[in-house]
Length: 245
Image (cartoon, rainbow, N blue to C red; front, side, top):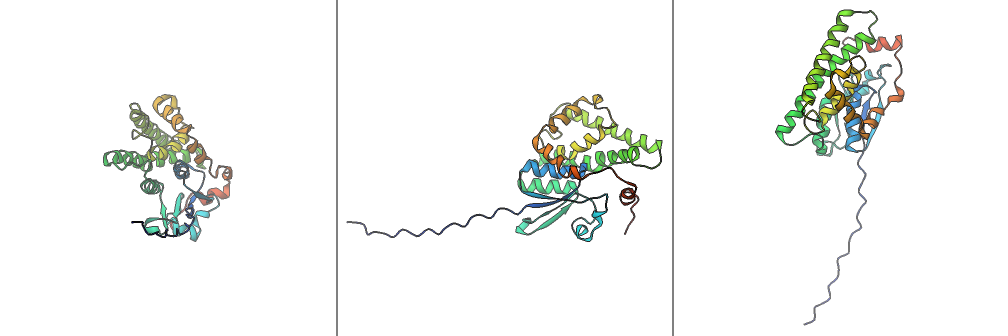
């Protein structure tokens, strides 16, 4: 028996997929700002950099405080956050973890591996970053020459680099494979190398070069770099000595 002809269903024209809205990155050319621009470059996701000139006090603008209540960079606004709704995230460590979870890269899902990443990420945000920041301040920005804090913080950075050097003696990256922990530490090691001889820390020096040759790292470090200028006396009043508002 001959089959009856059947009508082929008319295919509806597919709508062109909308390009994802870019993540808004609020940043400045500092080691903390570099962490997030490096991560976004490594991920290869669309983002827009919005420089926040901390020398001029732009971090105290009411609109920025809604995103970053601690009036510090970096911060992000992801227009396609959980549930498809926008979300703002401040604090560099929290941003790195958020992006790592969202995109499933540079932040392992395996709990044992993730714990290692978290250990070295928190080591940076609670130790290397603050101590290197204080050393840099007293060595380069303090109006008075204060030998005690200069030595105190420089010595602590030296100790921390020793901790890092021992860790890197048996692995290429801090948590075994390249991760947000390395992104968090890299720019701070670069800063510390200005007053600490890394030849004392051969494994850290090799790691610094290993991370630094990555194209995404180079692009991330370049974000807003051309805008940063030497600080003036007026800038100093904005940057230092802030109290609660």
